Image (cartoon, rainbow, N blue to C red):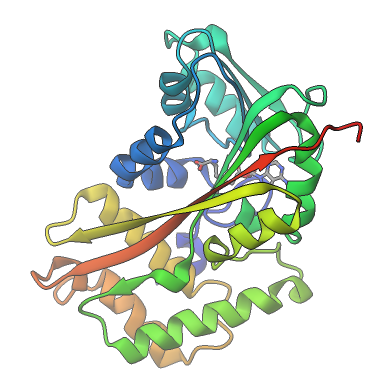
Length: 289
Ligand SMILES: C[S@@+](CC[C@H](N)C(=O)[O-])C[C@H]1O[C@@H](n2cnc3c(N)ncnc32)[C@H](O)[C@@H]1O
């Protein structure tokens, strides 16, 4: 099996960012993602910027939360994702409340002090200096506005029926590779970012920083989307030649998720666990101060 072909890369060269993959990921965690947005308790009529919106998968959830008088601006650096977002939402009842624009997180295409909330999901893992980016986004928030960052942390991932030693070696090898991959010409990634987010928001000057953890547990029998999600993640852990893992570990690991006869995903003892982080902070400074 060629691992490289199984890892989904978008037009900006970011792994696990291809549209189809993001859709699978979104569907597979739909109940938790709905809960995350409910827990934000967004005010009706809010103006929300979805920073790094990708194919617009969070738009329906955000639109529901802010009601018919609210507005959403989705921003991303990937044109293909923005076109998909536009198409996905063009026939929806909230279509006139939503716009999508091409821009980086640090230079949002709005005036300062306009956004009630800046929401950003699964993007901070690609930021080489998250605190600097969060600080650069702050002037776009109204006084008292909120930055909400949601992301993964693969330090929290566990499988009940995979040899614990193999899991540790795979996770440690990937974490080490992520610390070094930029020096080999790959884009920055930190898939262990979730538990660091609160510190980054505080370092960027946000106040009243709050962290919420969502433990995502799935067991036998897995829904198709979650199965695909886990197979994609398993491939991704050992992509780019997995320089810090032995060939045997790579083979054993892939076999766990792809073997026709002894697949861990098909065993009654299967259980997976992963915690995602939603961290918010309030901006209490004026852009001009
Ligand atoms: C993993 S996807 C997440 C998409 C969407 N937020 C979701 O959760 O489904 C990350 C997205 O962030 C975008 N992105 C990465 N770095 C960015 C930056 N500096 N400015 C704007 N968008 C960025 C990518 O193009 C991609 O669409």
